[in-house]
Structure formats: structure tokens, C-alpha cells
Length: 238
Image (tube, rainbow, N blue to C red):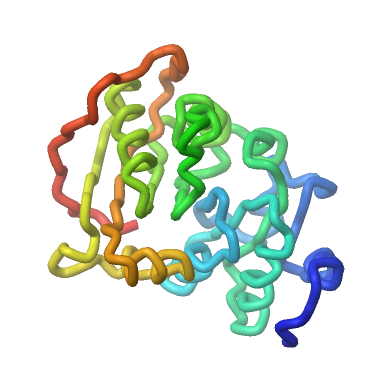
């Protein structure tokens, strides 16, 4: 595929791909029908080119993955790779994340990932792990569903720990340097384009996993100091 392919061409191809959907599709409560099976559904929010969704889908054929992003030209890349490689347990959905409850029914999503998002340094409510967004995710996930965060950003990592503390959530894993682990779990070895850049710059990659819970986050609450949370052992794989 030509590197010179422009956004309009990618949008047209994206719309025609059999593994892509957008705001025009009625998907709420229909994801098992769309995949043609009753396997668990895992969503990657702000998936970009879908590298992590594809990597996880390759590892777990019995799980359905959905990469969600608003940028169709980015999603085009992941959808194209999935089609070329015959990866049938992944789909790509082009919507705004705060509209997710319109496209997923309550408890339809069993697990979620957020990988290397924009940390929004000056706009806490826009951080994808803020209380505002946790309240959105809770509308489509059961309280015991796992949320996985992988980031190079100290700010985003700290915000995740703050929300876990504020909402009294169950933290299952808190790793401040993924590649200092021995061994590194296979599901954390998946590297996105941006992760490779951050690693080359010497940044540490952080990983947090917690249960989403059912308590409504109060966005007026803040923690004034960095959270020093104990590191639970990483005993389960995603």
C-alpha cells in the first residue's frame, strides 16, 4: 500500500472494510452477533493504529477485541493489517469515547485497555482515566471488569493511582517499570510505535490493572500529594 495514500482514500477504504464500524452502525447489545460468537469482549480505548488490539487478538483467539478511536485514518492501519493477516477476532469502531454507552450495552464489555494516551497535562477531566471517564466505562462494564493502563506518562500513571485511591478500587497490579520485570509477561511485551519511541528516549513504561468498581467517581475530589501505592504482584495474565 502506497505511503502516499491520503486521508480521504483511507476513510473510503475504512468504510468499506468488513472489520470496521462507526457512529452510523447500530452495535449496542449486538457485539456477540457481530463477531458470530459468545466470547468475552475487550475494548481498547484510544487505540490509535490498533497495534495493541491486534497484538492481544493474536495471543487470544477465544477473546473478541474492539479498538475504539475517533481518527479513521489511524484505525485504517489496524484494520488493514488485521484483514491481511486473517485476524478475525478484532474489530475497529470509529466513535468518540464519551459516546461509548451509545454503542455498548451495560455489562457488554468484560475488560478494557488504555495504552499510551494523550496525558492531557492541563485538562484533567479529559484524561481517559479521570473520574469522568471511569463513570462512562462503568455504564458498559460490570464492577469486576478489569481496566488495564500502559503508559510512559508519569502524570497519567499518577492520575490512575489517584482514582484507584479516591474510589477505593481493587488494584491488581501496579508496575512502575515494566521492562525491569523478570520475566516480562507476554501481554506486556506488545510494543506500539510510540512505545518504541519512548523506550528509545529512556522513559520507563508503567502498567496498572484494577477493577472498575461501581462507585460513581466524584470529580470534585483531588489528592494533593503523589500516591505511594504498594505494588501488588503481577500474578495473572490479561
